[in-house]
Image 1 (cartoon, rainbow, N blue to C red):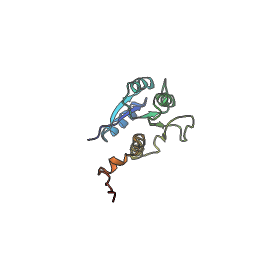
Image 2 (cartoon, one colour):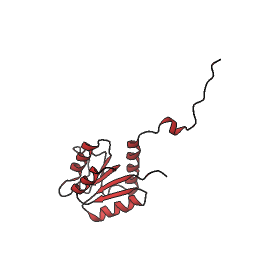
Image 3 (tube, rainbow, N blue to C red):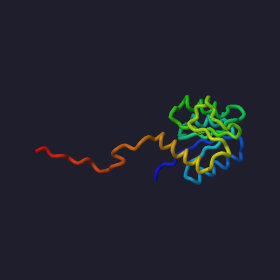
Image 4 (cartoon, rainbow, N blue to C red):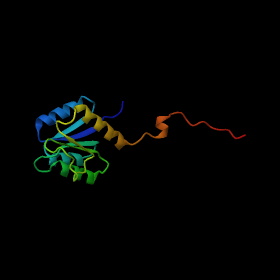
Length: 140
């Protein structure tokens, strides 16, 4: 059984946060959920986070600031920025994916998470794809 991936979810809307947490946990992910960017950043510093999903506007540290701090510490950690207001991508953000709340299906979010985690892990090595040892060619 492969190890579960841990996703850091941040949203000051408790209902959205709860929904996202349940959706991800039922798909086999571990979820660390926070309603404040400061707390989420402290949790990220402890390590073990594979991906970040955050709302764009929150009191204190907002989504783009949280993602910038995460990318500063760990550039390879993928991040998804979700907004209920903006319908266009925030070019100042370092997010890997931008989604407008209400404009995407839950399956779309799950697929983007899956693709970002695959990209983070990288391609499988040749010997992992083909467990058979290479054939030896004899010299005549």
